[in-house]
Image (cartoon, rainbow, N blue to C red; front, side):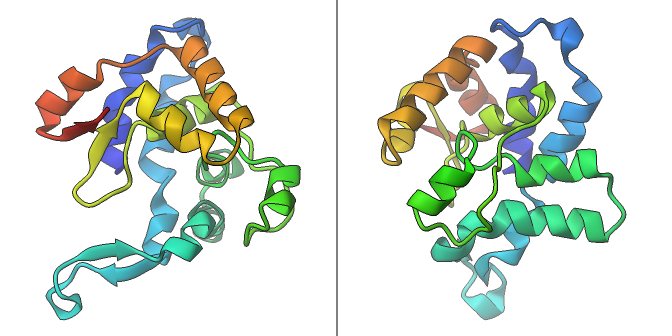
Length: 181
């Protein structure tokens, strides 16, 4: 997952956000760290003892950002670095959404606080989070976001307008991955 998001980071510079205002090093670090919490929400680790299949614990997957944040803080990472893990779920989660959707998260905002966090969040949406991993197109993620309300789908399209659309077909060819159109 991390490698795919990292590959997309440079491709997200074609939108309205001027490159000179983006701390590419911070975005790179965030891209590498943001999904570290997924290791705490595994149903099966993919080892031979587990049947060789890596699986996430679906109901607890929503917690991976917060668990990653806590892990990074507990292990001496800066608040700035840990925020990448905390604030990348969906297109950002507001306190109101956490309450309305009865999510198993503390009722707080989980919204990117910097342009770099937002870029990592956007790049992450192009990854299917499935085994085997697949790339998602703008339209396929829009449909996914719409399952949580049309506001989410609209927010996604605003983010695409802001950061541009990467060449998913080209990236899929480079990484030998399928594309969900």
